[in-house]
Image (cartoon, rainbow, N blue to C red):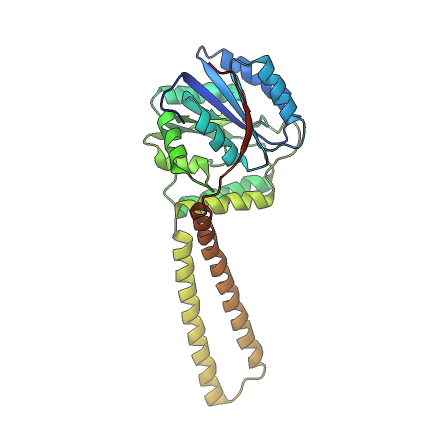
Length: 315
């Protein structure tokens, strides 16, 4: 990311299999930005789409080459790597992220820019009257609760990707070299004056969400393990308590055997204890593996993503 800023605003949009949403996105987004009265650029990152998203983005670049840039990945690397690639190339004083599915209306962009104009360097959108399934809403509340209890990151709506960042915050994100990270949380830790603003939330215009249950769980593993070691500490305390209780139970069973004689079916009691302790051990091994895996991904030095080509008009 160059140090010289040439534009007031960069809008970053990751795209993955959004051919059914892109035409309406173009129709709604460009008029909003044109009406702002400030120079801007839009950076679309095509994250290995298997549909016609690539052709639609190329056509849009041809239609508005003055403000449109398209980054093409050779494969699917995930939403946050798509955003990171655009961050490395953004030229705006303010960099705003937006999903392509239109659940975060482009018409809400001026609200975030008003906050950045007021001096906030990290502005998050907080979705009002969410149009998601009940499962997604309650799962989001649970994850927000876990994050608030285990980290110092205070966000009421971590899942909203309608966000605006100052150039300094974006530059710090790029310098971090993060491999698996949750960009809104990382930005919060790097900002000096963060805030949130309420934004509308709409039903998905077309298609289905690209976030499966597995991806959502994976994302929240990244969120927790990237910003705190609290899970390791909690597991250590839990394992210690289990070990102490198990030791007490062994003493009770041994005393009972000496005083009252062998307990009928006692083998199954001990087997249950062993299985429980083994399950606790496996959870701990998996948790430690998460942290070791993150370390491995950093030290091996492999490229986080590969850009096949970029559509842009050189100034």
